[in-house]
Image (cartoon, rainbow, N blue to C red; front, side):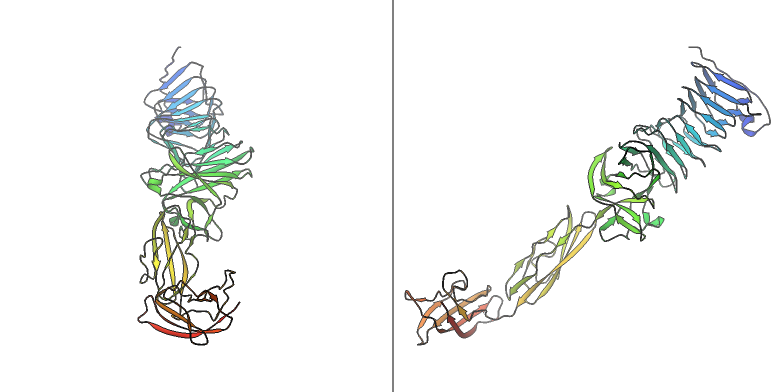
Length: 497
């Protein structure tokens, strides 16, 4: 292969760019044939237009160790243009099936005319390439490698609808304000947006991509940018949310766009639990100026990160979207009725995956206040509140009431020992008796029954004989658990058959 090296000095006062460039095309037609090699060594190339002329047709390789300024026309066909300086396009660039390889340290894509690159390759390592005051388009491949493509307030549109039209190693696309990375789609495949935060505005940058999966194979264009930091600063208060959500990510959020087409898309957000916390849901800033729950979510992983996915997202106005958690549920348990001196164990139902803390109040009559299931022994009717906090700091509360019955002996006025399993025995019904003696007498004053076991009762039999239906008298000496002294009660009971 024959290599042609051209070093041409043409001095003119046409413009500053013209005067400072090592290679200046003063309105000629220049052709680099297939296999040809043109190098502008340690300086810039200026393509100047005079009366419609000033054309560079490249089918080979042009290497410029400086800026390329195009005021005329650059036509490419299966070629490569490599530059270490800025790409300044003020007129016409036709990429065809070609490559522009930007391999300098820090470079600008700028000018007054939007460039449609066919294939754009960003080299030079972990460096920044910035779109200065101009949008840009890639119709073929956008290869980020390890570079940061900073669109600033502008748009980089990857119009090639292939899901593999953007590739990267550790590189990413950053944007500010209304800037974004957009992708054209025409399939139901997954389209990754390798978005990160600008390294030059709020270092260090973070890489948090998103993924759109359209629900139909129609022409759509979706866009995305990442904002590092609390969305509250931008007017999207993370403490204002609907009744379903409990917490919204204060570390970063995305602005997502749908500029072409009408198809909804599944939306996947990526995050690092070690530095971002653990998230299970997504939220969208919407009316009435609050974060709203986006819908049923699914957890997953990819690109070395954790993910949360929501299907069928169709509303991208306004643009802010964030990771979130919806409220878990807490049911303290049913209300309880006790007699004085009795205790009960609380068994709440909690849906949180990971609980960070429990807190029961009031604490005075509980065996513990920071455990899940304490025992309670109140002396009066008490409402107990449980507050549960999960590992994300989400707090949910619920309460139950423990009703304490009056300290009286509960004993029936009639019983029917007929074997039907209902009221077959005459006995006290209290469950918190610690001392107990029950005696029953017939109408002649004869004792027909006595027990000191509060869980036993008279079955209406005396000396093996079923006693007649009539009224019997009884007396009982008893003491409740927690009671200060013994008491005595008397009364009548009717035996029924």
